[in-house]
Image (cartoon, rainbow, N blue to C red):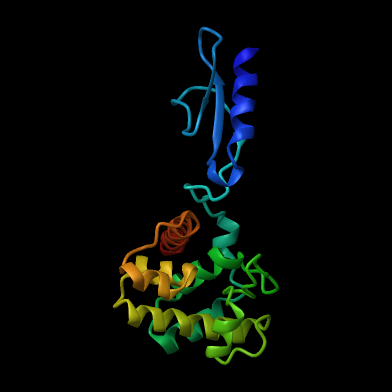
Length: 196
């Protein structure tokens, strides 16, 4: 019983923002283990604290990938900007899961989750109008694609974290949310390429 008490005392001393996920499991000798990495394969474990930004993006559901509600608009604006419509759709799904009224905790809005300042630069009047939002988001992706010479990781990093942060080091910034976001978009993109 002492180990859980020691662990809880240690947790109280560490700010939650500094912690990643915390896992626990009991080994064959009945000893409790706490770790910040997943336990070995075959071990039954509990997640005591979830990582705020998981390193492992969730596998997209088939229903999410097959939702064609906005495909016509995505194709239209992707073709106008010379982009693969599956990439634009992958970004949209990673950003809002296809919810046109989505608003992030940072204030990004609509299907492509466009920040108000970026929306002004792109002449986006109504961020909750699907066509306007997809048009602006696709145009923004194209601008980033040109700025970063087609380097997909940098383009996605800039879409998520802002181009300035990427330009400072000409690399993906070491931001967990951005790293997770890139993985999620690429996962959706791969899934859309495999879909009939």
